[in-house]
Image (cartoon, rainbow, N blue to C red):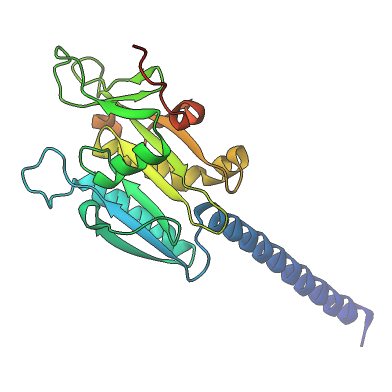
Length: 250
């Protein structure tokens, strides 16, 4: 074998080894990212998730679901499948089970989702959706967390309007699965929060830990023009949302 041929053979061997090591390193990184994602969502391979659908609050049909809420549920199902788990879809008024056996994604505010109302009362007593002032000109409820108000602004007040959504992870107990609460003022804000959760779960895990509870408020800007794509972080309300209101003084 001549020196030239030997050099070519050695070069091919070195390239093959480098490619193999690169592929192995990428596989390890992908595996670690997937394991961290599974830990954050409480979705081990082969695990189960419950998707709780809300009803269209302004529709006379009790079984109607808003289009953007359907999209949100579809994206949650894709996220669950990405983790190697399986999901079950159920209506908010058909859930008759406790918490912790499987990860739960609960979509919609308390007006259209009874399950959300129960979660707020049990785990986020400092948060509530209250009726807007009589002169507000719209029926959308105001998100109240502690002493902070997050009021919906219609397109007549601001181009495209502004809506808020409460995104929270609660009921974290040793050996149990978490509950993710997506409670928005509109269906578009629910959809936006699901996209934010899927895109930013790594930063949320870094900030709150892989098994920490949190409650944040997101702001959806000009949904009429941008849909659920323009969403901004508004406030961390974990402390205020999890604190029980003091009894009213006599």
